[in-house]
Length: 174
Picture 1 (cartoon, helix red, strand yellow):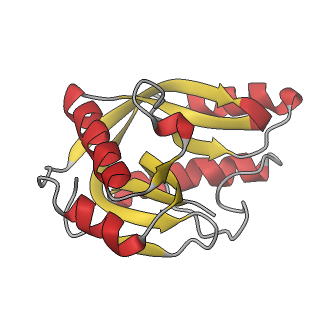
Picture 2 (cartoon, rainbow, N blue to C red):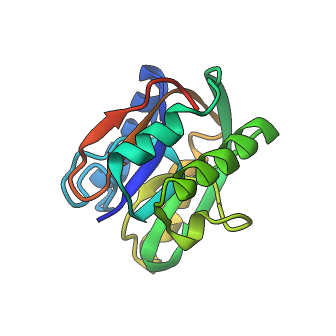
């Protein structure tokens, strides 16, 4: 079980990622659309916690300054172990700073941060495939290449329980 601090996209951007998920699923490649509980949202995670107190995390994040909606542009694909593939967005220094502030807030609240989100370890990404085989990687890369560059508009923020898909909207974009 994990709790993710997620940036969510506007309706158009959400739809564009879901359309990519759909094309990948049609090609027999598992995506977040069908992974585990099937309630995954297109998102960019600031942090993932392995243990937490929900109310303390909400309070800590609620105390961060309000951010304006912003775009991120995807220029390519990134692969991770065990067949995980994601869109690789270019991020602004503002978003990088906000990610660092979110990490400080959730760890100060007592949450145990997953090591991939610690300072100097975060790789911004938007997941598109959850278990692509080696033979499927070229298909994923080709399908992503067909849609990039792709600008996605960050619009909201939420906490997401990755085990159940339950979400708790944050009071403002962080």
